[in-house]
Image (cartoon, rainbow, N blue to C red):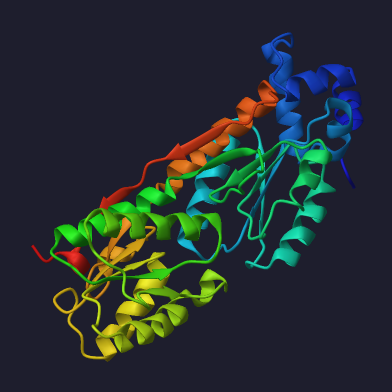
Length: 337
């Protein structure tokens, strides 16, 4: 039998309003009364009807998060930090994966909107922002995570992707590398900006980018990133002159690329220096620990939570933006000096 607020009030001889105030920790309920109510709530295993509450308060206390892949440590770490920070503010996170499929992403957004979410956070895999406009039209605040769209004004939390490409390439040049290839990411703002940082840094140092030195890794989900990294390394190994270093869009690609390089008999970093991005927790435990650019996933989650509470407590027509600066973590895979 479902226990209702009315049942608790009748058992204790109190009004429904008093019970409701106690559950919301209102100061105008006596401590002794509040203690009696909470004890009875616990004993009866009462759970509030959030749908009914949202109709009265206009708030569901639910935040939606849609990411391309929950296997990727970057997004799972963001989700973990975001959920923990929101919990402190009595908000709860609904998480969904689009599997890097634009159609599935649209379906997930439509489904989540039906839950009367208070705010939406999306790391979109769309080619443009057309479908995302529906969130704003539904009156739900939207925060773009990690990926933005030119010409689409929205709240945003992410990392300086251009700086990621710049940091990785500057480091490899400082190690004495002259022929630096790039296994690039998808044709999104994130992939494009990291490639731009790489190319501009080479140009700044007077280094050329021979034909074929920028290798596409495909648009698939990160769950098959290592396979795509191996495939991309086959293209690297076929280049003449062969690169002496490679900057990979993320650590998953880098791990697959290094595995293929080992199979080909290359010594890392002596024959080929490698830098990834993401700084996975296992990056230091690999056969050759992987140098990587840390994107600050946990901090992105925490900053997103702060933006959500700010948007809900003080709505504004102006878009908010938080762009974090990445840091390079140097390990054996690129340490030549």
